[in-house]
Structures are given as structure tokens and as C-alpha cells.
Image (cartoon, rainbow, N blue to C red):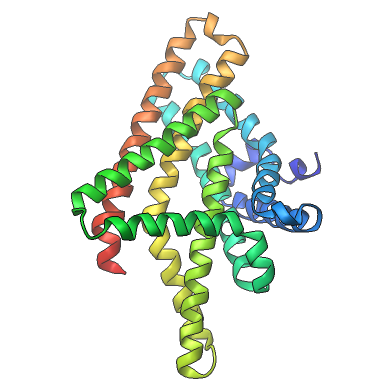
Length: 285
């Protein structure tokens, strides 16, 4: 596969920041291929094409992590090794998110409507739900609902990773597309407001809006996505172990214990993300 030549798992763990550009490239290629070949279904096809490009890297990384489980005895060292994979997947996710955001901003409105149709409907549904509940629900109630919803997404990440090995990548990429649209829409609306009031769009105003929009979503989005990444790694490691028939070995108990630790860590990240989203983000924005 041509896109596989851009990055291998060993280079990814040594230089995780390079995955940002890889994710940006993969999703950009997927966007234009989906518009060219599957125009009417581009909003979903671009997600699938991005996932397909990521499969070799993620699958090889999961195989490597499963081997580490069998070879490394010290738990702190093992978690640190898993952390390297989590970091490069996060950079991959950030690159995909920025790509979707950028193309949402710069593409003509008619293409944006086609390309991000499903994502826009998803955001509208979320906004309608939140606005409908905001009057009657308490902060703790909102915290609970957000937390349980995020736990549901985490469960899907683990199950998809367990069943398909790399299945969590689909959920992460879909979330990247939705977040990218949310950020892009925030930027477009606010730049439009600046343009209306000042008669033109000033560069300083544009970058201020861009920074605020990134902070607004990433301040709680980073720990939330990190939770999904870690949960996906846990499910993927178990999946690889079963495929390679390592469940017949004594080391499989160690793999299960390591996966349970990763899931616990991901739950802690979700707690942090929900707390930030309910109690901190509204104060700042």
C-alpha cells in the first residue's frame, strides 16, 4: 500500500509528532478522493478512506504492543511503552482533526455541505439535545450524562478494537471529523461576525478566533480522546493475542491484567474530561 510507505511503527514511536502530518495527509487524500468518486456519500466515505490508510500502521503497532506484554515484566515499563503508542495515535488524530477543520473553512459552501453533511447533522442533534436539557438539568446531572455517554463511546472503542483489531480507529476518525466541523463552524461564524462589524476580516481577528475555537474543544477533548485511544489499545492488544493464539500461553493472564489497567486509566481520563467540559470550559468560554 502506497500510503503505508510514509511511516512505520518504529519511526512513529520515536518521532510521534510526525504522525500529525501523516494524519493530515491521509485525511486530505481521503477528502478529495471521496468528493471525486463518491460525491453523494463523501461525508462517510472520507472517514472510511482515512481509516483504511491508517490500518497498516495501527495494526502493526498493536502487534508490537502485544509482544511487549509477553516480554516485559515490569508493569511501569510496560505502561510507558504503551504510552508511546498512545502519543503517536493522538498526534495522528490531531492531524486528521486539523485537516477536516481546515478544509471545512476554506472549501466553498456548496462543497462543505456535501462533504460534511453527516457530521453537521450529528452536531445539530447534539446541540438540540443539550439545549433541550439545559433548563431542567443540574450541573451534576449534566456531568453524569456526559460521563455515561463518553463511557458508552469508550465501550464501543474497546469492542470495535477487540472484534476488528483496529476498529477503534473508525470511532476516533469519526470523532475527528465531527470535532473538525464543530471547530470549523465556530471559526466561520466568528470570522463572519468580525467581517460584518469591521468591514473586513483582519488577520489578527482570524487567528484569535482560531485559537479560541481550538481551546474551546481541545481543552476537554484531549483527555477524552486520549481515553478512547487507550481503551482502543487495550481492546486491540487482546484481539491480537487471540488471533495469534497467545491465549493458550500463561502470558495471556498478564495481557488481560495489562488491558484492565489501560481501561482503568481510560476511565480516569473520561472523568477528567467530563469535569473540564461541565465545570471549567463554560467558565472560560
